[in-house]
Amino acid sequence: METICVNGRLSANPRTAIAPERQSFRVLSTTRLRHVRRRVSLLRNNTGSSRTVEPRRKSCVQVRAVRVAEVDADTPLPVTGVPLPVTGDMAPPADIRQAINEQPWRGGLEPCGDKDTYTLDGASITGSIPSDLKATIVRVGPGRVRIGAQRYSHWFDGDGQVTAMQLDGGSNTAQVTSRMVRTERMVAQEAAGNSQIAVRGAWTQAAGGSLARNLFQLPTNPANTSALFWADKLLALCEGGMPYLLEPATLATQRVEDFGLQGVLGFSAHYKVDTAQKMLYNFGIATPPKAALALFALDQNGRVARRGEIPMNGSRSQLVHDCAMSSKYLVFCMDAWSLEGGDLAQALLGTKSFGGSYKWANGMNSRCVVVRKADLKVIGDFEMEGFSLYHFANAWDEGDKLKVHVCRHIGPRESLEDNFKNMYNANFKPQHYNDIYEMEIALTNGGRVESFAQVSPAMLPMEFPKVAPSMVGAKARYTYSSCYSGRPACRYMDSLQKYDAETGAVEIRYSEAFRHPSEVEVVPKNGGTSEDDVYLVYHEYDACTHTTDIVVVDGKDFTGPAACRIHLPHHVPYTFHGCVMQHY
Image 1 (cartoon, rainbow, N blue to C red):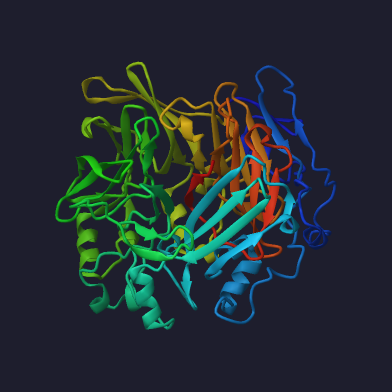
Image 2: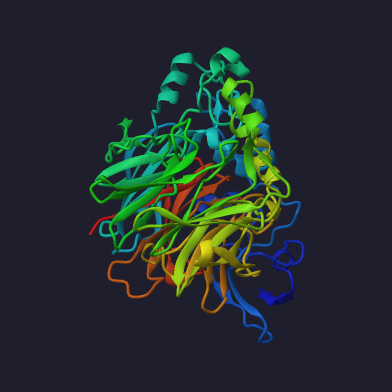
């Protein structure tokens, strides 16, 4: 195994190289005065500097990290509990309040309600929004995972909330709007009140499992996974149904938008945009009883340009959450997390939930399907070693080969799903995250995987990979991701990393203790000439104040001080994915 250098120490294991009991961590000093006061018992040596570690021998992989304060296993939250609401609709019940105080990151699961548009200026901004940054960042996630004291049975069942941040570097101001997506299910739930869960989700049974409320009912669409701006339409997405159209200025929910697609039940949140072709590629479950994954391409005007499909095994349902795109192909991987015929029948009859009936099929290979973008025809359909996944990082063509970067779960899928099923009691460990693997596919004779290997053992356990928009479908040098350091005071994603495929270097940007960053949105600089001429914009939840900052980092100075922190007066519940609308 490669040896890596972190903070001047050598280790053959990247997990132990960053273990908090073995070395100090340091915290980036870009906090507000009130945060510093609340952290006085925790933070020290806040110089805000960063350090590049020189390898002690040639075999070392260079890792650069920002300074963080020493944190040990007994570090308490430097305030008396997360400052959650104590009255009103947002006040949590006693058991959830206790769960959050036991692990403060869980405060980011709590609802915040609708927030009408407001403007923040220099008084609420540490640093300055870069003058050339003029963009609207839209993020989507589960805005509530409980109805009063009733919890949804899975994080992914939470009702969707959209948060838009219009950043104007010219005036150094930010306009923020945050609003729940008023889906059909949310309207029905409001009419029913908070005494019970009124509608069926993918994992959550309606009315405590009442057969009458679940029989032959397909899961409802929470619109909680991502955002899309396409054909002058702003949309909230979840693969459980068609997108919801939003009014861009207010985020008011308008209607379901199906783009004229027929025979398609869902619209994946992991669409792929080919900027050269000005074409959007996506997929969704075909309308039953057809057992297929429907494929489609939308032109820049939102018209259906072509259709295709991937036949599925009618006796087994496999979850397909994401795909990868190269300049010529789409790549799908279907793992062994599947719903077999008998369980599927029970789900249709309403005796079990759909999502809760999925199981890991031991010994089952993964299926890999390659689709030609030009006509959406399957050109490769083959098996490979079994592995669990949700996301891809990227793909590119290389001669007669296809290279794919995929996020492979480190530990058992069942353990990860158990966390998702009860997030207020979840305990995240490295096994619940991913390593990036590179898959090399030969496209001749129906296709086959020629190699499948971890990209870099120096990377922290990660999730939510991103490359620059111009490099989607091409060989990217830089991959950004959210990651988990293993610091006991954090217990959830607490850092970001930048991987350099050319040099093998990994740069790690640790957040302060009790702060948790989202996935980054990669915003190209106006007039940028290199791949990392980008701004990285992300949410960062602060459990000490129960608020969220919007953080902007220069891609070229990844571990340096943030260009700015925009301090929201409230928190934003954790988000999954989003989109960027740049204004020139």
